[in-house]
Each structure stands twice: as structure tokens, then as C-alpha cells.
Length: 390
Ligand SMILES: Cc1ncc(COP(=O)(O)O)c(C=O)c1O
Image 1: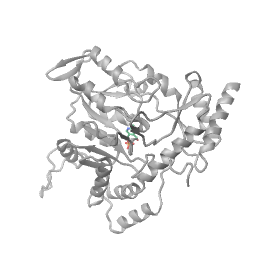
Image 2: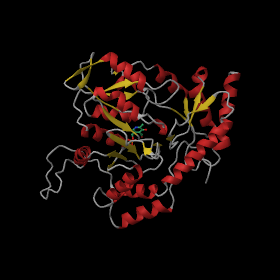
Image 3: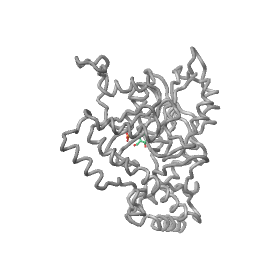
Image 4: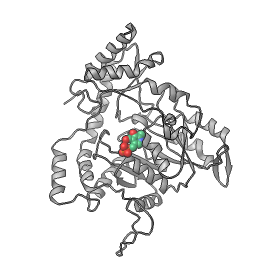
């Protein structure tokens, strides 16, 4: 083994171990008596399905926390993305701009609607969308017709964009919206990883037309599996809710289903877990921030790694801590992760860029040089709320 690799590995391992004293897994959920009581209560009352008040109560808690007028709790973040695109009125063969550096669910949701992803780049040395590069690209590759934007090459309408607030980092939607004004492109914020993150005290996911959260088992709070759609527009809420509720006509005693909907609403058992988890959300956010500060101290004099930082006016939820290895050592990323595993420390690479995956190889894409540079350099670190503090 090369001397330099050994040095990098030792530094990374010791920096992690200085912080990850209680839990070396990547991200475990945290439960206590609140969750057990909440689940027991609902099981005793036989409130387990999508019927009853639990889902609505959970939705109220989400709305209050993020300050959105409307919330629909559903069975996954990916499903919330699909419902959102449909509520925005996406059509088959439309194109949706989406970063290649994201979880595949952001992209699959587009495909489920019969639409096509069109991959765009992140900023250099960063993990979120490069809006300036995007606008230059759109100027080159699009034309306008009937109030919409079309791709010159494919002739498809470019209907929406899904900016992803990766790891609780912010895509500035205010500036993106103003840059996209003349293009008439809907903005669906993927805030799946960003619950608790704010820009100037406004919650991520509430800047665009619709925002989406995930409550998957690895998120800052979990409902087992689950997600939510948040919006301030009644029209989007009404359409998405009907689709999520098997297309049922509201207040129809005849139980009429006059469109083909989906069975997407969050069951009461999951919602009751979410209600218990929300009691602790502010505490979890504080712990994540503390964890970030500890890792920052630990990596302060690192020769080989940097940590990403929240940008100005942003308070990130620091959901998943992440070390960024210097470019020239990116070739070691997968070996480092494998060798840490042998030491019972779980770290992960970021997802393989989606434009390189088999189902998405032939999709439209811009220049993705920054994505290709950064994805090989990211190593996510043990980040459970009890990583350091019991
Ligand atoms: C960025 C991003 N988007 C979408 C999703 C989809 O959420 P879910 O797993 O709840 O379907 C996830 C993660 O799980 C995610 O990390």
C-alpha cells in the first residue's frame, strides 16, 4: 500500500474517531419512550390506516414548522415528488431540469410521469446547482413558443426544474426564480434532506411552487418511510391531494373516484411515529449543528480534507456530515470507505451521477464537469444524533 494512502487513511480515521465516540454508523434513527407511547396508543385505538386524525395532525405539525399553508403527508419523498409534478400539470414528454448529483428518486419521479430528465451541473467545488451556468446553458439550447420554453434539439417543452438542497445545503431559489422568470419554468424544490434548514429564517422548500420533504429511516426525523408535499397554493394542494387519495371526489357519499389516482397518503401508524419525532426535532437540529462543529474542529488542520459549510444567511440542518477529499486523492475514496468499514466505521460515497446510470444514459444533459469532479471526492461521515452525545 502506498505511503501517502496510509497517511490519508490514518488522518481520516483519527479525525472521525475523535468525534464519533458513541455511534460509528452512518445514520441511525433516534427513538425513546415518546415513539413507543405514540405507537401503542394508536394500535390500541386501531388507528393504523390512512383514515383518522393522525395524518392530519402530523400535517399540521409540518405546516407549522415549515410555515406552509398546505401540507400532504404521503408514503415517501419520491411519491411526494411525483404528485407535485402532476399537480403542477406536467405532460408526457416534457423535460425537467435536475442535477445529476442527487438521489435517484428525484429523477425517477420525473420518469414515472412519462417525462424526461435533463441533467444539469452543480457549482465547482460545491454540491448544489450552478444557477449561472444553467442560465448560460438555457440561452444556448432553448427557444420560446406560446409562452413556454423548448429544447432546440429534442423539441420538447422544458416544463420544470428540481433544485435539490443536498445534505441541507441551499440552492438560492430567490435568485434562481428571478433568473428563470422569462423561461416560465416551474420550480419544485427537493428539500428531502433539508428539514430544519432555513435561509433568512424561511424554511427550504417554501420558496418554489411546491417543496418536498422525506421522512425515510435515515432522515433527521423519520416515519419509517414517508414524505410530504408543502405548498402555499391551494390549486396545487387540491390536485395533489385528490391524486394521493385514489382520485376520490371530495365529500362524495357515493364514494366516487372520478380520476385515476394513487394510494399515496401516509398511514396513521407512520404519522404517529412522525408526531413523536417532531417533538424532538429542534433538539436534533441543535445536536447536528454541534456535531458539525466538532467535525470542523477535528478536521481543522487536515492536510487532505475539507468540510462543506453553510452559505451566507443559511442555517443548515447539517443532516449528513461530509468530508471532501482533495481532487488529486479522489482515486482513494472507495478504498478509504472500504478500509474504514474494516474498522467498524460506516462512511459512504455520494450517489453515482445519475446521467451515467443505465436507465438515464441517453437523456439530455449539459456540461457536467463539476459533478464529475466532486462526486468522487465526497465521503459522508457518521452523523446520527447520538454520534457524540448520548
Ligand atoms: C435528495 C433526495 N430526494 C428525494 C429522496 C426521496 O425520498 P424517499 O426516500 O422518502 O422516497 C431522497 C431520499 O431519500 C433524497 O435524498
